[in-house]
Structure formats: structure tokens, C-alpha cells
Image 1 (tube, rainbow, N blue to C red):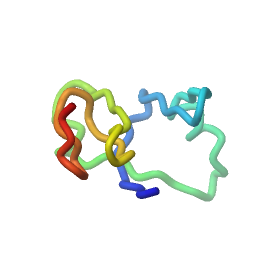
Image 2: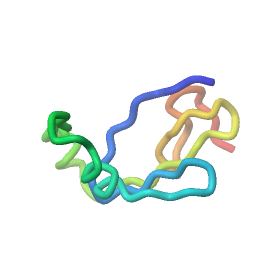
Image 3: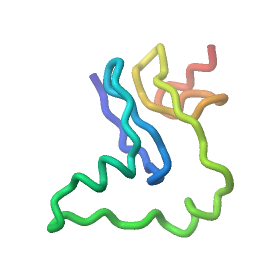
Length: 75
């Protein structure tokens, strides 16, 4: 299993199996001593939030509607 880091917005929702969690709710549960940096200006200015999907070929999390950023799968 490979893993690729992705940037998330506090309004994103992530799934683990059948469970879904709002990123802002997960961040609220983090201990106070841990910090999460704000996204870079380039990401914040990129426009509307992008939906993500898991590539059926390699398992990488990649933007919906385009080729997989890891293996190039387009199916």
C-alpha cells in the first residue's frame, strides 16, 4: 500500500472504510500542543475546493475528474 500526502481544507470530509469525518471536527479533537499550518497561499487561491477519489489502479488519493497523479490512470 502506498501513501501520498494531500493537502486538506478544514471543510473537507475524509473517509475511513464506511465512516466519514469532517476535517474541522478531527482538528478540533487534536491536543492543543499540536499545530496544523495553514495551507500555502497558492493552494488557498487555487479556487473552489476539489473533490478527491481513490485511484482504482494504484490506491492513491487524487483529484476527481483527472488522471491519477501517481500512476496516470484515467479510467
